[in-house]
Length: 114
Length: 114
Length: 114
Image (cartoon, rainbow over all chains, first blue to last red; front, side, top):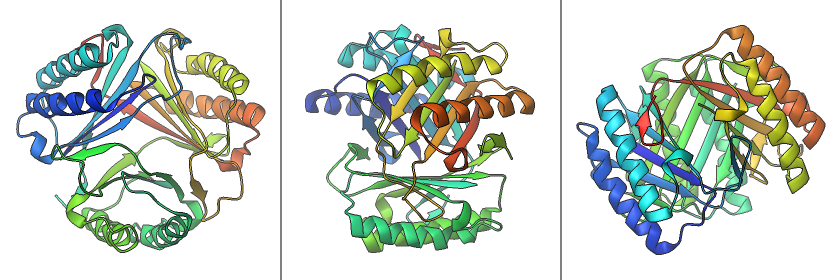
């Protein structure tokens, strides 16, 4: 029951979206018990964004929402993976990428909460 | 002071939006003290989304943000209601719907925090 | 490591976006230790939104996400500033503006978590 939201001012084409989606599906296994088989991913591209007051570079804000919790080490590894994926596929510099985590206590699927 | 964000890869037409909005206004009363009179709803449709690595089905990610807290039973009932609303009006299978809850400690309205 | 997401049903033109961005960069200093030099801002305009069941007025849902925490007084001042900025520049009535806060424990930048 994880969800990853990728928000960027860059344009993401179909090929890039496919590759990023696949690689995020692998990366999520940094969190014990999580895998692509429960992962939802949403993309928002060409979003008006500013970092440090400027909009002249490609940037991304990634939100990782997971049911339950994990260790600081797990989250740190996942940040490294996600950053690498966006750098490699979308040419976004790591210094322009935020990855934010949310641990969720109540999460529903298929009409009931876990 | 609740807010419900509906994010889906499906297209939502005006009639569907109206009906979903009205029914969410009723559903939010599953949470004691909450009603449509303080509810904000936002819709994002035709969002590029993947679940379990696939994009071939209609799906939704719903975020319910409430000021304060409620019981696990209340959230569970609300998940059931929201899922039914999206299934009925947007033809999204319950197995393709996540409903995520966030309990908020600081929430502002009209220039001040509650 | 703060991030402010501005979501509104109003249209935001380039000039308004610039001004709001600059003023939010000042406002964030209401939170001790936060400044525009670490602030990311995202804008989503013309979003289908409802408040109290109605869509006939301009409205906004603002999410402030910060790494760490701050005092209730700080958040309250920031709500006042943000509300004023949206009222002045986007003609949104304070009674149609929600400002929601999230304190974040895990936040990555440049490939590692803080």
